[in-house]
Length: 288
Image 1 (cartoon, one colour):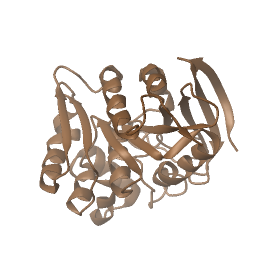
Image 2: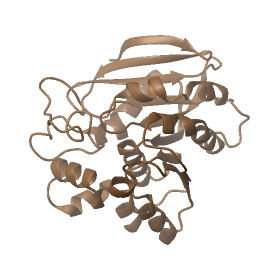
Image 3: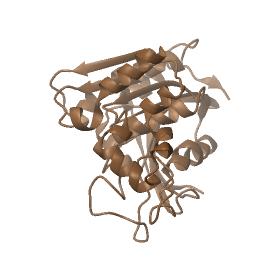
Image 4: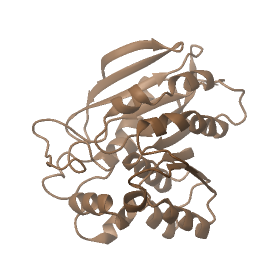
């Protein structure tokens, strides 16, 4: 069951916000979907966008500046929340842990385990729900995300070979096992055994043999979290050793905000479209 929270026309398509009761989290979950203009009975490639710490679906929906390009290219754009929420859901006083900071893992530790199953939610439950309710071509999926969401996008792609035909990220946390944000989140949600963290660490996954066809990463060189939390050079080294093509673009003067994300959103969408729409004309969907 899916409730329509709102729907509005945008660039000839429909921007919607939807809510449903999640089996994975045991809570109500809200997500947004932009469906571009398309012919009746056609299926469209889909871009999954995962947001960062403190965010909801609304941050990219309001600030991401993706609709015009998605309408031109014929891409569906899906943005889930970053964690379960509610009065009966465990939380923490810190801004970088608890509600708003689910880190795209399935928690095994108390008090987080009952609801914090964001890995299962974004890897399995939400895709099934979207496929059942929107005209998506599940053979043409791309994934991207920002910061904590970049971490989620990279790990989902690395652990699901063949599912995503394109993967990119904006200022991702690439090696959470080696930085304070990640050590706090993975330790809190998964426990002290660092071996359990490797499946949620992009650099570790690549070291352990996971592969993707290629990656696009944009990173602002004026990002205040660059050296302490993000450390893209670790991803570059891992990709180089594994032979994974990585286009890492250090953007001069850009910070960690949605001003940065929105500045390069069009580049990312066109990069995804080149891979998702291979063999089709621009904006062309496929027969249902």
